[in-house]
Length: 144
Image (cartoon, rainbow, N blue to C red; front, side, top):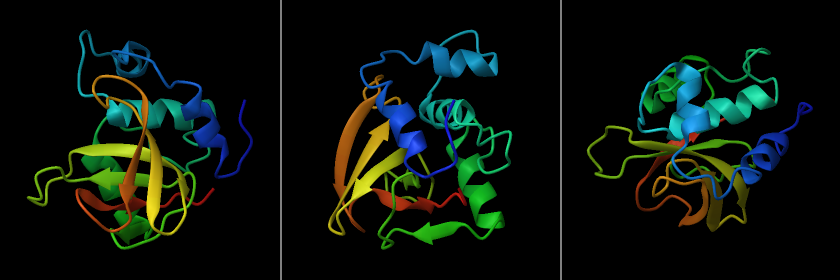
């Protein structure tokens, strides 16, 4: 079981790197077949740490659900923000203002943000992005 702290969720997420298909994440929501499971992955990791029960992270299978919850709780940051480990990075791949994907920030050196993402090519993977650039839409910032 995890202890409260912003690197605990990244440790849980890192243990899932290489998982393909995400069934253990999406089946938790009662889906009978594969769905887009990036938000299910984040929720599963948060649950392993006790963050859902503690009210720190919402249980959600929807990227938009995360964005709406964190915005309504004043815990949202724009894309120019330099994130901390345990923050959730939100993407808008098409640049159309509609959120498409979520991941967990593992680290940020001020220029590059490193993430662990579920459903990245249908697997859990590490990825890197330039802070404030490209498809980054913003960040959910849990109060751990």
